[in-house]
Length: 77
Image (cartoon, rainbow, N blue to C red; front, side, top):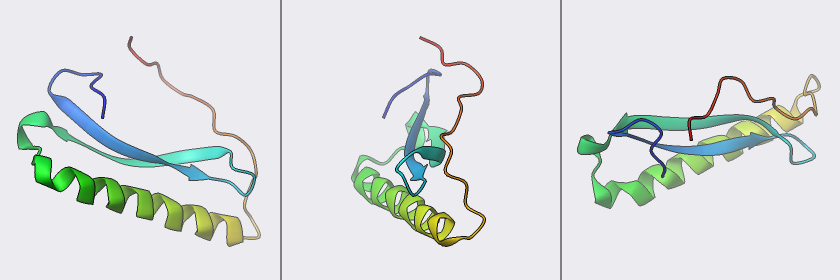
């Protein structure tokens, strides 16, 4: 977990194409003060499973594109 905005934390996982390119991501963001340390592993597992399920469904689609995602916005350093 990384903080880009003080007090906000997040968990994310990539949604991948057939060739392993990142198409998107799925994640959660929430106030750090509401984070229950004992729940982090469960949340990480759920986010990863959701991303893997979405990746599989996209890869099975006849309409699936196999292009890498492009970054939008900016990341504060």
